[in-house]
Length: 205
Ligand SMILES: [Zn+2]
Image 1: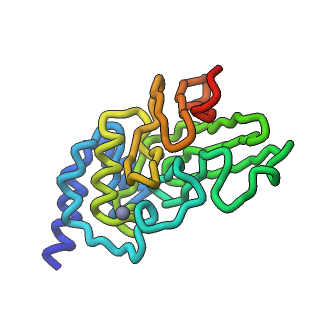
Image 2 (image 1 turned 90 degrees about the vertical axis):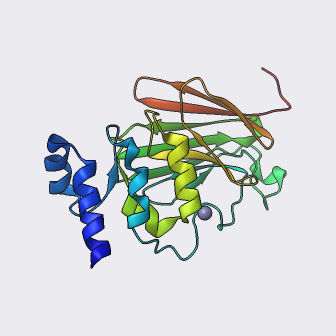
């Protein structure tokens, strides 16, 4: 009971009046991370962790570089050639992947042409709302802290880039260049959102 009161108190304290009205209507009794309440991390301890298997550090991935949605736990491979598939099976094909998160209303479109050594992920920015309660049912506390750390003070809070080999999280951020495994990831901002271009590190353009 005391824990329940702490949760509700945390929730009330963490929102401004306007924000509270807005949030209370849609996500009652949920603790959310928004642009204006990034210091919410101190309330994490009051919410019990109900995840059986962490979707970030205990899953098996067909790729080293993936996008992870904080609200859904869904992951999206960025590697052009995924593990377990022979390169010749990719010849001439274009792979399309689509993802949507109804809490933040952000969407992901990934288009990869492995035979041409290119791919891109477009991320349409949502409202930046991240549900800490959802995260507590999807990820271990260690990963939750690491993900919130990565997106702290960043415009994009609902999706992170994960290096699955090294369990490292990176924000989706304009101008960011990363090398994860065999691929170089470069993030730019277009009219509707972020675009991550994917290219093999061995090929210089
Ligand atoms: Zn974890």
